[in-house]
Image (cartoon, rainbow, N blue to C red; front, side):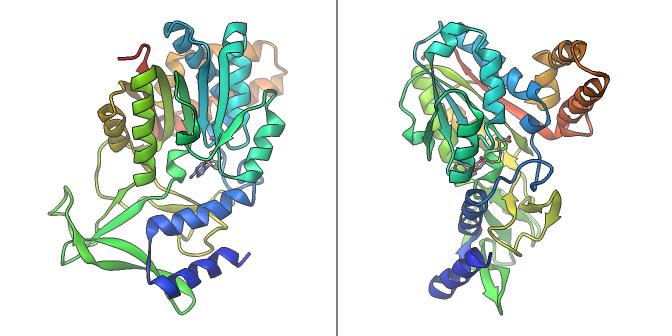
Length: 341
Ligand code: SAH
């Protein structure tokens, strides 16, 4: 569909080069609104689509957290970027063993794509409230989960030039998109980086983290933020495009590819902490899952499974926690405020 590329060309012709963040925002809004990108037939696969065990573990963590908070009623359960609703379906089945929890929970899904909202509605047995942003969720005790949400949010990029750090912008040459740099320079914490180095910031992600931190500090709760990313701010161009499970050019086919960037966990951590909430731990998906008993869960599932299913469970477990698979690549930021400060 040429729609988004043409819209972007028109915008650039009218206003001049646009920021990388604006390019990603427009591209991803169209991308997610017009398809279900997940699974073998889609463009990429995620942990909840690999195994039910993933959502179950998150559900049980939240159930335990809720009990430690003194079982507040109501409790806002919030998922950002719920995709097909698979994680939440598994979450609710596992945590729903506690009837009081089921009765207390109010489910809010932060999702902008109408196509995925429909998929979530079809998947879930309870009626959620959909919100465009966290700001639309009512204040109150909250348990928040997000898997591969922050990596989909628009980032800004800055490039070290001979003059200093300049914002990277996107322009059009002929009918092709290309990177250019702004003629204004900006200061940052890497004044001595080599020419050509790139640094990224994610204002949209920081805004969510700040609001999340403020809400949890004020009303109690917790959060699990799961994504791939880096633990310390450092230069690096991590913007990538994926289509049909393969890397694709970032500048070709906007709106038809999944644009993502690695998550800067240090900045997320700082935003949450400065807002007053307590970041308990930052850990690999492997260690997080092992600590919550994923191997025992796999054994229980295998005990009632056919030999083929046993193989599937084994392979899913390896994908989720294998050191060379998602196990070390994906990290979990755990926020935990059992009581209000
Ligand atoms: N968590 C799911 C899906 C990850 S894909 C899983 O693990 O399978 C990213 C999800 O975030 C999609 O549901 C997408 O529609 C949603 N999303 C992307 N950008 C968003 C934004 N700015 N606001 C709200 N949701 C967004």
